[in-house]
Length: 278
Image (cartoon, rainbow, N blue to C red; front, side, top):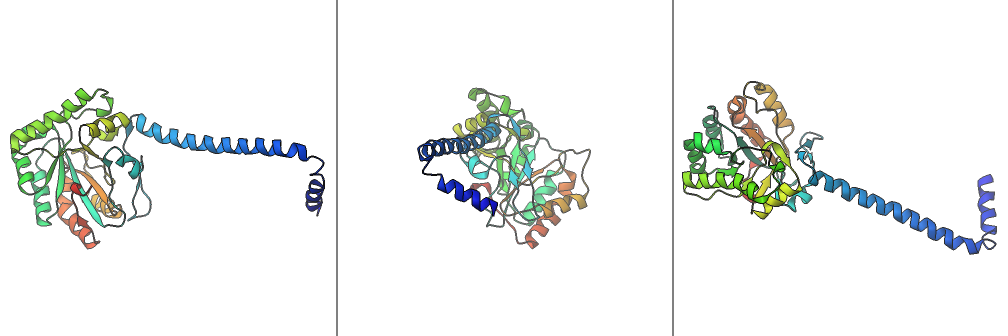
């Protein structure tokens, strides 16, 4: 009741103070507009910082079977011809393997892919082209894509000039053409998942599409391999529509479980696409 009386008193006094009301309302409007503008600027700056500063690619996962959230939104990455996940309404999986060196596991991986007629992209470094040329030729012969993982596997985000940036990619593409007679597709994966805006912009300027990933697990250390049970559990629980899957060819676990893993994914209703779909 007291609140209602106060409101009524204010209403009765409006005419008395009307000459002050409009200036006060105007100031209030400017204040709240300023607050709103400040929030918009803050969000823009926050997004820009993610791309301007060097970052490690990362993901946040929710419920099993749902798409994760990346460091940068999918649509924002597309502005740089950069991708890490396909459509949410298509149960497609995009298989990718990072190839730093060969330790005997790739033939079994290729056998499993052939059995399931599953295409993959192998991102190779210069050393791999030089040390495992026959396996690279087999990848091409069996319909897989060979992508660019740079020649020396440096932190590419630390390279600020486009000439040096291009050199790391060109040495790989030149070696690939020398080896296979084919032009290497302009698909690039940043070593260590390190990136920034300048890094992505230079890749785009050179005509490359940059590919990160939306599903990976700790498989890279050949001396500390996860169990088959751990690998299958993580890779089936976190699989999702449009997944760009990152695996390492050096993993003995991957070689051992890939046939079973591909079968499980197929049983879950997934099929295998190629990066050309991006």
